[in-house]
Structure formats: structure tokens, C-alpha cells
Amino acid sequence: MKKLIAAAAAIILTAGLCGCAGNSNTVSAVITETQDGSSVSAAGLNIKLPQDWEAYAGNEVYKKLYESSEVDYDSADDLKKSYEDNGINYILYAIAPDQTAMLSLTALKITTDENGERLSAEEFARNNHDTSVISFQASGMKIANSGFTEEICGGKSGYLSRYEIYTDENSAELLMGQSEFIFEQDGSLYSLQVYYHSEEAGQQTSDILSGITAAE
Image 1 (cartoon, rainbow, N blue to C red):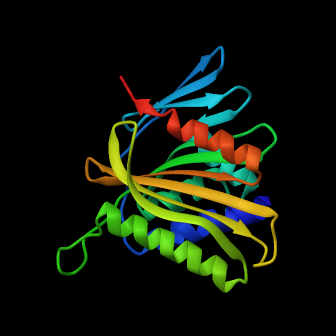
Image 2: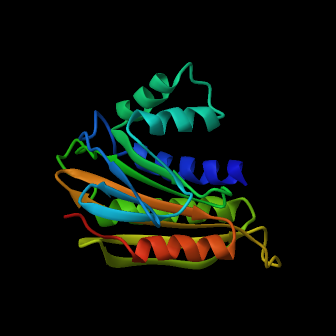
């Protein structure tokens, strides 16, 4: 399942790489421990994470990603540079204690093409959604509960992609669910993603998304 989640993340990031270049804006996350879990302030959002979730920000994100990466990088710094060279800045990475769910927040710097045009948040989000769904379907998996809608999350207007993946058309066993909310701010696109691979974890990630507020 970890490999499937990693593959899903790779598909989504690869879909966006064609429009990204140069360093993305430097955005940091502030993690505050609370009685009920932790609270994260980043990119104008306040994200409340459940108790026992592990949350990482800054260089700690890349250290965690490097530990679980199956790609050949010499160090966490090399992994970070590979993302930054493509205009991707990981702001937050959080994971449930049983690893049934995870959340990430990234900033994506989108450049203009030769005609001076650039992808809008809607175009980028739609491209990610369609590429991911088609890729999984081409692998013989079943997509269910798929949707693409304009939403407001934490006071930010953006686009929400969601779907669930099953082994095949005859399977009722959930392999993975995914939601991605993309919004634009200060010349960058921001991607807030959650993954889960059980109904219970799916409800937990849904609660996290619905509980996001605007940062004070």
C-alpha cells in the first residue's frame, strides 16, 4: 500500500512538472502541539491534525520523504533540490500513526509557455485529476466516487479532485482514496493532498479537510 500511495503521488507530481520550472516561493509551516493533536499554520490555512499524527515541516519533510523514497538520491538535500528545480516546495507532510492516511501541502511555481500563457488553477487541477484517473484505469483498476468541483477550503477558492481506487470492476475492497485541493496565491499554486486506504481513514481525512479554517 505504501508503494501504491507513492505511485499516486508520483503520477500527480509528474502531471504538473510540465508546467513547473524554477524555484517556488518559499513558504513555511508552523506546527503547534495541542491537547487534541496538533495545529498547522501554512499558506494562509490552519489545519488541525488528530492526536498521534506525525507532522513534518521544512527540511524535516525531505528527510522523511528520503527515508521512504525508492528513487536513487544520494541524500535528502538531493531529493529537495530535485523538487525545487522543478518549482515544487514541500511545505507540510503528515501521517497517521498506523500509516493508513497521509496529508501533504506543496507549493508549485507555474511558468508561462512560449506564448506568455500559463495554466490556471482550474486547468492544472483538472489536468492532475484526469491524468491520475486515466493512469489507474489503464492499469486495470476501478475508479469510484470520482469528482471534480469548485470548492472553498479555509477561505481559499479552489478546485477539489477526489476518487477511490479498487483492484478491478468486481472488487469491493478499497485500495486507496485520494483528495486534492488546489488553489492559487501570490503567483504560486498550492496543492493540499490527502490519501487513505480504509473507510475509517477516509472519514478521518474528510474531517481534517472540513475542519480547515483561515489562518489568523
